[in-house]
Image (tube, rainbow, N blue to C red):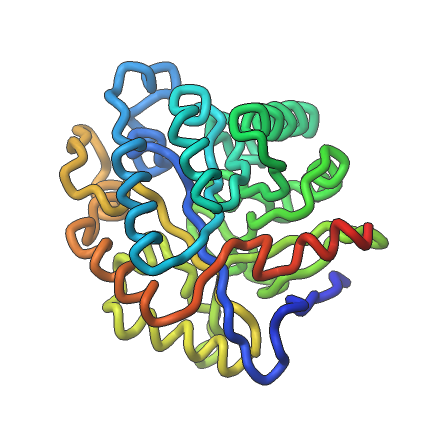
Amino acid sequence: MAKIVRPPKQQKDRVTHHAISVDVEDYFQVWALSEVIDRSEWDDFALRVEHTTRRTLDLFDKHETKATFFTLGWVAERCPVLLREIAAAGHEIASHGYEHVKVFDQTPDQFRQDAARTKTLLEDITGTPVNGYRAAGFSIDQRTPWAAQILADIGYQYSSSLHPIAHDHYGMPDAPRFAHQPLVGEPFLEIPVSTVDLYGRRISCAGGGWFRAMPYQLSSWLIKKMIRDDHQPAVFYFHPWEIDPQQPRVEGLSMGSKFRHYLNLTTMEDKLDKLLGAFTWDRIDQVFGLEQLEQAA
């Protein structure tokens, strides 16, 4: 049974700080577009991730907010100045793997090599420790029981790779909803993105496409309900391409993929602006006291 861990900086009856994160990938690297864009073609596309990530940084600066940036190694190699800017601004640099390959599509050895390679790459570029990992497509689940131990062995302190809901592309609906220690006797944490129990169902209030699809008032209400009912901090995420309605339209997508990727791109930035002003947000490592775990290890 995984041990649920209460963030040390939070009071049981008054949760004040919440974790916000950014999955740094370009629009053509998204899973919804992978049905028509192969990884071998990525270098044929003009990068937009630098511009959209800097717009994200401006949004955080406006609200005096620090965040965690889970970054693809592929992006970091091509945009090292951007990575140094993120780190210099006081944000946390974390790993999103090298090429956005789902964990359950890798062997344990392939996963180890990918996670270690990306950690070293990000640390060499930014000169800062990389303690966090987020799997592409929230793909650490019941098919990858070996993943947490590999990440801990490499030197990661935590993963934020679970979305504990039922979904056609990802999800582990029976997994713990809050930060927990999946490895017996080790301080390594799994920090799922946020869900709320509503009439016996788990509903995502974690961000991304869910946040784009819902009216802002509903998303905000769900986050507040989770905080009130469970006395736990929210863990929220989004992508820089989600605030880029001018991105090129990719031809040949199925109706479902087109809907998922392009839904409400024009309203996302305004909704994020409201959200950043409505709650107090910080880096994942700060909200969950990772520096204390490191000292205790």
